[in-house]
Amino acid sequence: MTIFKRSVITSIFLSFFVLAVIGIFKYIPLDFFGIKKPIKLSAVEITEYKGEKLGSINDFRENSIKGPQQVDKNSYQLDITGLISTPTSYSYDDILNLPKYQKVVTLNCVEGWSVKALWEGILIKDLLKNVTIKPEAKTIIFYAVDGYSTSFPLDYILQNNIIMADKLNGVELPSERGFPFQLVAEQKWGYKWIKWINKIELSDNTNYQGFWESRGYNNDGDLNGPKFSP
Image (cartoon, rainbow, N blue to C red):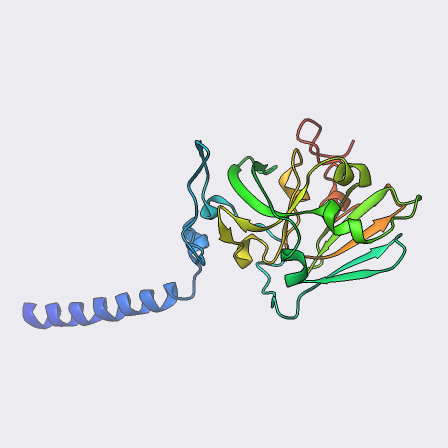
């Protein structure tokens, strides 16, 4: 075989090999190589607020239990149930019509990363103003579209300005960050910052354990406390 023919065959083989590799790589997610695909945003996010440098929406890691959830704002409903006078529901627009608040808060994940961001939304206690909470209610439980849940002492919500955010760094929450609403659980580990909230329950069960808490994480979730249950 001549050198020319060998070169042609080699070139053809390499071409087919490259095309095959490209074809395979199309089906492998970027996360497999440690590369994060940028999230598509509805606007340009704020990078600084009142002199404080903010982290980016793309700095958060995707570690939800079932991946980002897609929620239709037109059919969305937030149910308030449990130990209250009358069960109540809010539409997406109902919630956005409540007074809005902004606050820079850092989310700290038990995995070791953190992101400081500007959160905007309504106060949970404003949601509860339209219901009469029964005296035996001691716990507030949040549920998400994907089946996730977590809980807090009711006083944590009533005595603090805890935001349920619809915006992050001035941008409407993308689905990856919990659209339509994510809880800004200040002074709590990231697993308490529930996303895709669709139900809030008032309960007398002070021992209720959410998704990660039932798997060994501390039910309090306090940043200055232990990460795991004793």
